[in-house]
Amino acid sequence: MSKKILIVFLAAFLVVSFSQKAEANFLEDAWTKLKSIWPVATSTTPIEENKLPPVSLYKPAQAYEEAVIEAVENAAKSVVSIVISKDVPIIENCPYNPFSGRSKLFEEFFGSGFNFSRPCETGTERKEVGGGSGFIVSENGLVITNKHVVSDEKAEYTVFNSEGKKYSAKVLAVDPIQDLALIQIEGNNFPAAKLGDSDGVKLGQTAIAIGNALSEYSNTVSVGVISGLARTVTASGQGIGTETIRGVLQTDAAINPGNSGGPLLNLRGEVIGINTAMAVDAQSIGFAIPINSAKRAIQSVKNTGKISVPYLGVRFLPVTEEMAEAQKLKGKEGAVLRGSEDGPAVILESPAAKAGLQAEDIILEVNNQKVTTDKPLLSLVQNYSVGDEITLKVLRGEKELEIKVKLEERPKE
Image: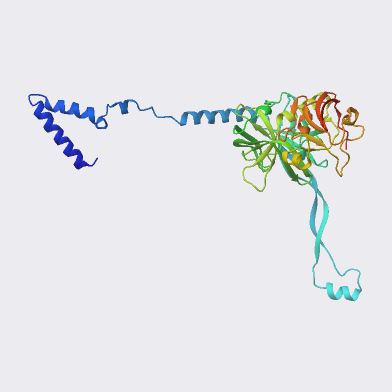
């Protein structure tokens, strides 16, 4: 309502009120009537009284920050930097006569007045050639890291803890399937990391990465969320070739070169993954091996000093709806046993062969757990130990069968 209209309305209202109650207190009565029909004109109207109190955004943000800080403080003591050292050639410029061996006249004519040299090796020197991260998993100095961090058998590995103390490290065992390795440092009463449960990880939950970023900045912290589950990625790197890693967690917490082998934490400071790779052609896409996949390797090394990997002995392809429709398969999911250039579907003398599995069998379940694209056959089998007996639900033609298989140790390649 414009000011002009409001003034006219008030004038008319006061005239009416004055004529009716001119004897006394007409202004007070007029004001009372005005408030009853014009509530926005007062500061004590019901609209003001029913306003919600302002929401404080700082308090929950502060609590979140405190949770991150506490998680980092609890876990950082167990995080280590791994320095890779190696004897490398010393290359210098050595005198060189390109005309040597020719006729003396030719050599004197063309070589006179010129100083020729070329690179040559004059010895070796020990130099730092790379680095990575890891974290302590036992009080006696057992450290887990990535296999590709300690893959060079000719290199020497040195561990620095969060306080900068230096330890020589020995490679105890590498996992033939996963990008995992365990190394040993000498000592006792080391602060071991608290291992969480990666099976309970949810999309969107907070993820905290700690590691030796760029092999230079130890205990670098980055924070993000879990942005994907059960990913399959193909990773490559110098000295390790190309490797397919299945069932990994995806996170947008920055994972940089040198972070490999470091822990991925939840807000409780528990390790839920082991940082292993990053997408170089994208921003903020990193991958971590779920900690539950590493727990058996850790326990195996503690018990036997080596990583014993359960072995089924099959080659397979994951079944998708498109594949099932195109190839007229009866099952819509699972793993179809099928050979390739690398060998037959069922490997001779393997546990699968001994149990009677056949080519084109479709494995639907492992101990009542469905085989899906999110939970492939290999990752389900890795949940068990050497010597365990598992029950497979198998689709063979039109029939569903239950086949028991006793897992054996994976043979050395």
